[in-house]
Length: 418
Image 1 (tube, rainbow, N blue to C red):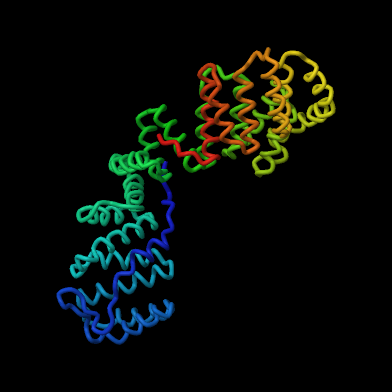
Image 2 (cartoon, one colour; image 1 turned 120 degrees about the vertical axis):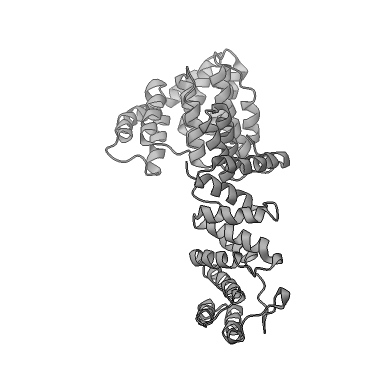
């Protein structure tokens, strides 16, 4: 696994941190240093152009200064200072990194500006996937100040992508733990680093907990897919349990393959006799451009559609039969059917009627249908309360837990941490 990006507003961060002071006139610095007199005119012109947001003009003036012969170390330091700020304003982060490396490496870099110069160089290097440079200047920064804010994530990513996963985890885990203690979400990149370490050490339980934390905090469809796929590895899954995982896959928008759409269509329509739900599931794949004409899922859909039409034609008779029955088993089946139709309020009514009548053989499934129907209506706090009541074997309680993670995230409860 490679962590390809750090999710932060890099341009804004650069503009906030990179603008090292550029003084006018002789451009005095600490130890009474100043640039060569021959640079005064072009650099003053560059500074005026920058104030006017004419960065192309400013760059031309700085290039003029850079061409002056006999430049001193301090001249080069100031020129790189100008270049770094100009390139950042132009979002030319490759050249900005080169300028900041020159400035941050200069023996004339003032002590007061070191932390700023090092941190901006790290951000630029990470943005450019230059892990060695990020690590070099990050370690210089750590020698004078602790890593803070986005730099924690950036340095962890730099170590991870450079192959030093031990150091990456050493930075990531304390930050994740601190986030947990403070009740705030951790960055996806840090959690991916922890997940990578858990996968390497075959810590399946830890990995699943980390992915749960990731979906609870960030809701990434790929992470939901990984979490649901892990749940499918449980032994002894029944068709109805599999269907409830597929239902979770749909509501979360989890990344789903064409093969999965074909299988879920079969489970719903053929195995459990809910053809309308099978039809809707595969149509969901079509709407996302995953299911296409001629593939196995679209072929399954062609077989399901006549069954779905027949089911819709007979729903009235089923409703009458369920209402007339003294026990709730038909009402639960009707609630499952309504759910597959997308009639979630009707599903809620039917399952509540089933539970009030009694005689339901699978109380855990009744609670599941009620919770799922509530979640589909946006009544997520109520849904979470229903999922908490689900009692059954390990598969049943795990599926209820995953639905709880979804519902809890939707109503804005405190994020779950690994």
